[in-house]
Length: 297
Ligand SMILES: NC(=O)c1ccc[n+]([C@@H]2O[C@H](COP(=O)([O-])OP(=O)(O)OC[C@H]3O[C@@H](n4cnc5c(N)ncnc54)[C@H](OP(=O)(O)O)[C@@H]3O)[C@@H](O)[C@H]2O)c1
Image 1 (tube, protein in one colour):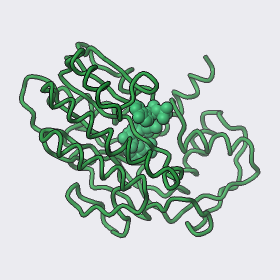
Image 2 (cartoon, protein in one colour):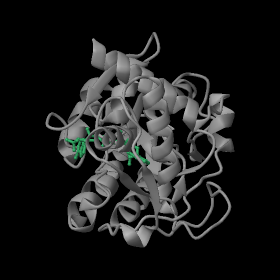
Image 3 (tube, helix red, strand yellow):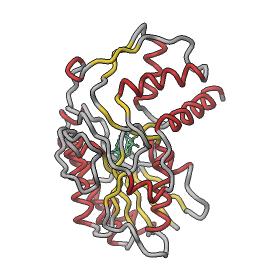
Image 4 (tube, helix red, strand yellow):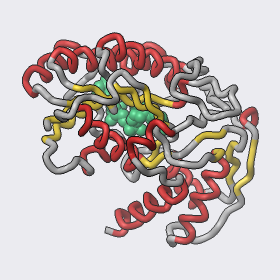
């Protein structure tokens, strides 16, 4: 199966590349060689490669910066997603598109179902919702996978930022009133490969036209997450001493973008495909172990 992955240098794209199943001919593309907003370039590549499956993990993911760079965020997350979906449709390729829990406003107190009303509160969230609509318009058999709070040993993320700050600062203040679910990009990559093998393969496309939710199991605030990172990192010898971590409120840490206060998704749809629902904390432990091994090599 020929698979074209857009955004192959990002956290998820990198995990997709290293976990590609046997039999997959992997074509990974990213900036500067591929700009997903460049429709003629995308069409040309698609005609040359003729993939069976296209996975879009490319995105503008700088949530705060997007508030000032509205046009770029929309061009990449909405227009670019539509360009890829149209190109995939034109060569008959299946299409998997990755989206976000930030399409929700966070006012719920119960996990969001895939068909819950979307009402993003940030430019990033709105541009990603724009991308979902553009994808569905351009490719009626596409599958959208929403996920949340993604991290990996590759790239920048909350885990790596916390580890750095915990080794440099005497104490940390971390937001305790935003609740979501950390998700290891490795598990998400595994789900995409499972979906890809059913969508891009020859067995029909059971998830065509559907929106699925996938994240690790459990829930956490950023504060819970930071405390867990410190505990696990101390146990692995990645940190030498514990520092105080203080819970604070959102209003005590102003950011350019507003974030949903509760962005927990109901993940049954994704877990029914993956067949597993690993807890975020055990996934965090695995990722930190991998990071330790990487740092000692
Ligand atoms: N990270 C999260 O917490 C999170 C949460 C929920 C959903 N998601 C979604 O999950 C997916 C994967 O996220 P991720 O964390 O892997 O993101 P990431 O690490 O930021 O990777 C995105 C990749 O896309 C590339 N890219 C940006 N603009 C592009 C363009 N015009 N053409 C081609 N490539 C372009 C980026 O390149 P540059 O780095 O050079 O810009 C980067 O390599 C995205 O759809 C994201 O919206 C992420």
